[in-house]
Length: 156
Image (cartoon, rainbow, N blue to C red; front, side):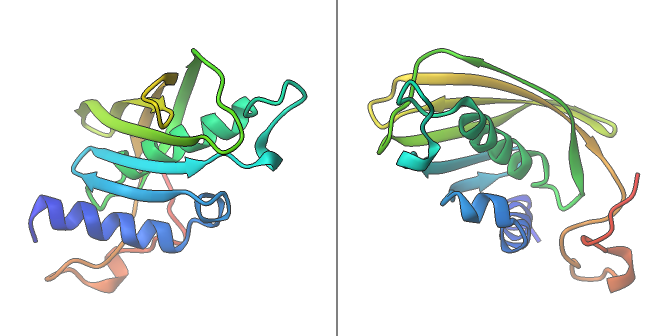
């Protein structure tokens, strides 16, 4: 299995169980080792009292892109810290794109940056996430026994 095939299989396996990303209408545009691009259209239900997209939804989109990027190696990875800086507002019907890329991956730790833009290319937010590898994988690879993977009950 190539690294690209592993990244794609990891994304498919994760997305099948990701009710949050699915429920918010997120779609995976691309994935590769250490990277992922997701899209989400802002709905009226996602806007706040200022009629702009609530920051929590922007954070969730960025966090999902981060998750698909840091889990692209078929190793369960979780967030250990994340922060976001909001740069411009997003509005209902905006199509947001979150592009995650790996900055560093050493041992069990990783650092990922996610840029969120709208359909015009305006930068909406910049997110940085730190990941931690835990036990388990997303799918059974050729030559691996099924008991080596348990995506339902990962433990540190």
